[in-house]
Image (cartoon, rainbow, N blue to C red; front, top):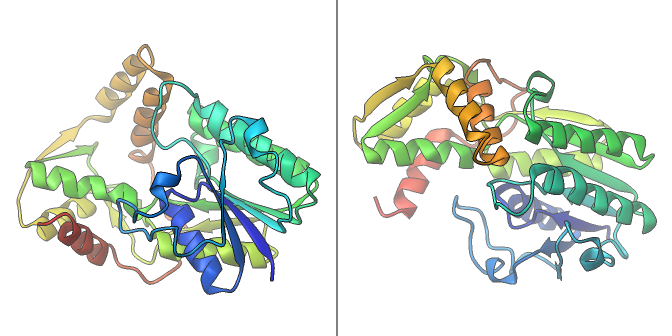
Length: 293
C-alpha cells in the first residue's frame, strides 16, 4: 500500500483528494496547521477529514523545523498548499513558493518517489500577478528537482463560484466587463480524480476543467435562478477594476493580487479539457440548501 502525504488537506481540493485517495486504497497522512478543522466538513460541502485519514501531521510548511518528519515513510507528496486569502503575515511567495519548496526539499531528502502540485490554468498569460509568479517559480523548482512530478492546472473551483450565490442573495450582482468570457470551473470531487490520476499516470502537465462551459454572466443568471431572486446587475468596466487593483497595492500586495486575478480572468476565456460529471446547478442547489435557503 503506497503512502501519500497531502499538504493543503483542509482546503477545498485537499479534502476531496484525501477522500479519493482513500477510495482507491492509499494510506494517507494529512498535514494540517489546525486540528480543529479536521472534524468539520468544509464550507463548500467538502468532506470532513477525520473519518478519512490514517494519520494527522501537525506542522506549518512556512516553518521548516515544524515539518521535518512530514515526509518520513512517504511514497508520494500531493500539495495544493497555497494562499487563498491574505493573512497580513505571510506573502504569497512565503506560502505558494517557499512553503512548497520547503516541502519539496524534505520530500527529496526522505526519498519520496513523486510530487504532485496544483497550480493554475493559463498561468503563462497572467505572469504580472505575484501570486501566479510564486506558483510558477515553484513549478520551475519542481521541474529542476529531478523527482518524478506532475503539475495539475485547473481553471477554477466550484467553491469560487459560490460567491455568485452570495451576490444573488444580496440583491446586487457584480460582473467585470460584459461578463461574456467563458470558463469551465470544476467540482472538487472531479478535480480530485484528476489529481489522483496524475499520481498514478505519467503526464507531467494536466490541464483540467469541468464538464460545462459558461460565461460569467450565465453563472450569475444561474445563481439568481437557484436562489429565486432577480438581483440588480452592475457591470464594472475592466478599466475601473484595473484601477482599483492598482490602488489596493498601496494597502496590501496580496489583496492586489486577488483583484488583478479577478480582472485578468474577466478578459479572457479559460476553458480547459473537460473532466468529471458534477453540474454547477446541482452544486448551487446543494449550497443554497446547506445555507438554509
